[in-house]
Structure formats: C-alpha cells, structure tokens
Amino acid sequence: MKVLNRIKPATLLLIFACCQLILVQIGRAGPTDGKALSAEDFYRKFSWYQKFSSLKTSFIQKKTIPGLNVHLDAEGTLSVTRPDTVIWKITRPSELKVLLDKNNLSLVSGSGKDRQVESWPLDKIPSNVKEKLFVMKLWLSFDPEGLYRQYTVFETKPNQLRFIPKEKSQIGFSSLEMHLHRNGYITQLILHEDSGDILDYTFKKPQLEP
Image (cartoon, rainbow, N blue to C red):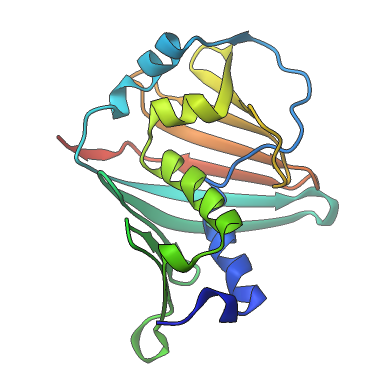
C-alpha cells in the first residue's frame, strides 16, 4: 500500500477531479435570491433519501469551458452503501473508480492489463485532505443533517436549491444549484467555477434498497 505523500501531484488532481460533485465548498457566497430553508424544511426536501441501506444511480457529466468553447462529456455511476461506503465510477470515455469506505481511499484506473490500483489508509491521509473527504462523504451519502450543518440552503424556485457554505472555502466554486424531481430525488447539479467553467451533472432516478 503506497504512502499518500508519495503520490504524484497529477494523481491527486485526478482524484479530486473525479469527486467534484461532492467537493463543493463554495469560495464566495455572492447575492442569493429566494428564501433560506429551516432545518425542518430542508430535511423534508431530502426525505426521499433519509431511509435506505444502499443506493445506485447513473449520471452524465458535462464540463463547459466558455472561453475556449470547449465541451467535455463523461458518463458514470454512483453507488452508496450506508453507513460508510461510496463508489464514484466514470465509465466513459475511460474507466476510473474512486472507492471510499471507513478505512481506505482507493483509486482504480484502466481495465484489463492496463488496470492500476492505488489505496491509502484514511489514518495516513493529511488533515486537509481528510476535511475534503468528510464533505465528499456528506454529499455521496445524502446526509441531510450533515449537509445542513455545513451549508445555508436557499430555495430559489420550487424544487431548486442553492448551497452556500457557512465557512469560507479555498475550493474555487462560486455557486452550486440543485434541481429536485417533484418526487424528491436529485435530477441535476450545476457547479459554477470561479474561472467561469461549468460542471453540469444529470442523474437518473436512483435505485434504493431499504
């Protein structure tokens, strides 16, 4: 098992690029329209996710770089097994899997003879990385109480939410929008980066095991 401080910087960047959905700690709040939700209202919005033992859904990721008129697409799956296992997997255009459980963070890239696996024990990971992993797990496990402790949540339109961190972050996102289906599950996440780039995730209805 390799030690984290021996990982190449490019590999670390790759890990966190895969996890951009849940490493959302917005750098600057900016003006917000809509009303701030109480804890009770937010828990009610997330009630669809509050009782399950495992979850699986697929997603399409679209990254737009407006200044270069570049559009990058990817597809993948998200699997969650409570209380502490999450798998974020890119299936197209190339295979990449990030697995986080209560003891380890693992990265699996490629397939067949090109398959590579790297794994790090969580107790060996630097504290600043652990903080990011903590937020990642809140998002991937759809933990409404944990998310509400971290963010002020605004409802800008019916079933459309915006998240503002309660403490400043160094990760460069200026805003995050969440769209919910009328039945309560997430259909879209839109991340606006400080650079002007946009990450847009579209999700299918999750399959839940009670």
